[in-house]
Image 1 (tube, rainbow over the protein chains, first blue to last red):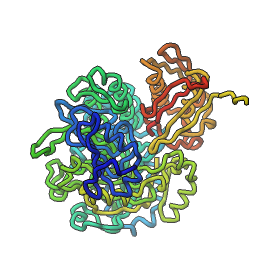
Image 2 (cartoon, helix red, strand yellow):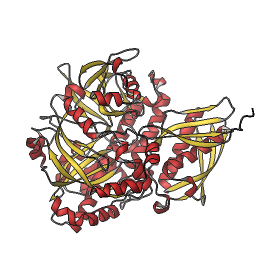
Image 3 (cartoon, chains in turn purple, orange):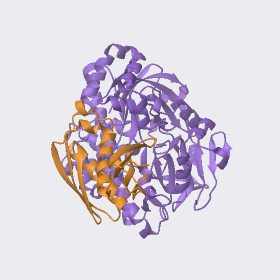
Image 4 (cartoon, rainbow over the protein chains, first blue to last red):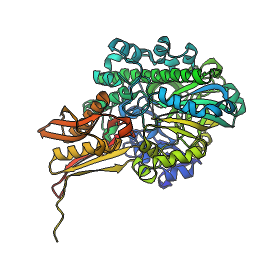
Length: 475
Length: 144
C-alpha cells in the first residue's frame, strides 16, 4: 500500500490519523517492505475498526496483517466494558484457533531413523482433513461439560496431565463460558469432531530447533539447538464456525437497533452490556474451551504415538496460545489500570515479564509466543516484551500470513510437486489432499522471517528460537 | 453483431486468505444453484461428487443477500453434520423463502481429496443482483 497516507512514527510503526468517523487512530506495525506489500484493505479495515463505539487507544494491525472480515487478520482492538462493543467479526469463524508446542526431550539423532514411521503413525492416529471423525463422541451432557471445562475437562477425562494446564492461557479453562448459549446446530456440528485437526492451514508438525537468538530466555523455555518439538495448530472446529456464523448474522441484523452504524456489515457487533453481546461472550468463551479441549486431546493422541515408537520421549507442554479471541484483561491506559475487552483476530496474546497470568516458571521472562510457519518454512518461538502493553495491548503477530490466494496457489503448483520438493529437503508431508498441499504451498505465504523481524523491531516480542519442520501432518 | 446468449455458470474469485464464490443464472434461484456448485468446487471437483442421495434445505431471510449467505451456510452445516458433499441443486425462491433439494454423497477422502473445509459464508464481497444483461449474479467470500 501507499505509505503517503500514514504518519511514520518509527521504521516499524505507521499511524493513520483519525479521520471521518474514526474515534481513535489506527496503527500498523510493519517494516517498509511489509507495509508496501500489504493489502490496501488492511488500511480500510483497520480504519473501520477505529470507528466502533467504545474503542480504546487505537486500532492495531500486526506485521502479518492481511484482508480479513471486518477486522483485518492480524487486528487487535480493545473496548471499554461500559460503552464498548463485542464483535463476532472481530473474533472470526475459527474461534480460539491457536498453536501449542510440546517438548519431546529428544534430539534429531533419536528421530532420524524412525521419522517415516512416526509420520505414518501420527497421520493414522490423529484425524485430519474434511470428513474425518474423532474417537470421542459426546452426548449432550458431556458436550456441556466440555464447553464449560476446556482443557481442564479433557485432563479430568484422562487426556493429558494436570501439569499441562498451567502452560495454557487461562490455565486451560476459559471462565464464564455459557454452553446454554451455544446452539444445538453448533453442538451437532461438533459431535464427531473432538480431537480432529481440521483442514486448510491446520497442521501437526515435528520440528527441530535450529537457531537460538536469546540464550537466557531459551534456557527458561527449555529449548536448545537440536531439540525436537511438536507443534499443533488447530481451533474450535465446527462448533466455533457455527457460533461465528450465527452471531455474525444476529449482530449484523441488530446493529441498527443498538444505534450502531456499521462501516462494513462484517464488523457486526453488539454492545458488551446488551443481551446479545452477553450471549455471544458466553458462547464464544464456550468455543474457546472447545478449542483448548481439542488441542488437549490431540496432545494426548500424540503422546500415545510417541509412547509406542519412542517411549523415552517426554512430551511436556511449552505453551498453548490462541489467536482468535475476545478476552477481558487489565491494561494500563494513560497511567490508569482499566478492564478492557481485547479482540485479537489472527494475533497472539504476548504478555510481558511480570504478568500475573503467567505460570511461575515464566514470570520473569514473559509469555512464549508461538509463530507457525507453512510446511516448508520456519516456525519461531518468541517471548512477550514488557513494553508491548503500551504498544498493542500485549499482542504480537501470529504467523506468516498469506501473500497469494488459494486459487492462484492451486493454479501455480501441484501438490505432488510440493511434497517431492519438500522431501528432498528432508521434510515429510502426510495429507489426505494433494490439492490442499498445493493451496498451502510455502510460496503462497509471506516471508515469516520478515514478519518476525518486524515484530521484534517494533518491540512487540523478542526472538527466542527458530524451528525447522521435519514432519508435517496437514489436514 | 450478435451478442452471445448469457448462460448460467459459476466461478471463483480471489481473496487472499480464502475463496470467493460467484454464481450466474437466468433467475436468482439459478444463480444460487450455481454458487452452490462453486462452494463445492472450493473443496473438491464437483464432477467427482455423485448425486446419490438428496437432502432438503429451507431458509427464510429479510433480504436476498442474507438469504444467499443463509443458503450457503445451510449447505456448509449439512456438509459438516452429514459428512457429505453436494453436486446438484434445485432451488426455489418465493418472496423471502428458499426451498431447495441438494443431491450428493458421503465424503470419500481417497476419491474426493477435499482440500479445505468451508467454515462459513461471510458478508465480505456479498452481492446478489440482476445485471444489465438480465443475468442474475450471487457472490460472497467463503472462510476456509
